[in-house]
Length: 276
Image (cartoon, rainbow, N blue to C red; front, side, top):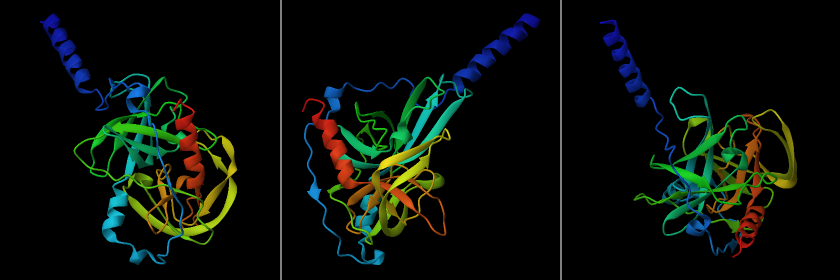
């Protein structure tokens, strides 16, 4: 009777363990570069917006812009079991390019970098319509200095918006808006203006301080944890920057963004240095 009882407990434990695997696709494998490589891309020059107030922006066009925002869950782990220790780091991304089979999204290096204390990682994308996809990092796109990266994920039946990045630098004083996923909320829009351009110091998730030597857009649109990698738009709904950090001060917010001119240089350098 005791043996039968122990056998029953063993079978029950195996059943529980099988049922406790995470919903993440741990078997996902990224395709080779030649299957998703961007061969050519062009950008329109930046032109200042003539729209002066947020209420004048077309609501349907603003909705389309939100549909180019994605939530990124970066899961670092040692094994795939539900009860195992994992580190989940979430951020935002903006779709800037598409092919027949894939969407391509800009985000931050620190959003998709594997946690240093774990062996493996998977990247999950959640789109505007709550569809979930396994994503992968575009080979050669991880840029620590600019805090930029590109991730790629497969298309589905849901049509997502490809945002236009403009080549140039938005002027100080111009109106902007940030769209991202701060504090677990989705597709949050905050408005502000460009305060100045300056170098910045930030503290990463390990508590280490990094000085960004490039001139960042400093703006007054509120951002928070989860906004990293999200889009900075002018009032024509063109991408003028990629957010990477901020002060998180509700009374006097300052967001930090890589300018679209630097983002375009980064994209073109990456594409054409890979043999195109």
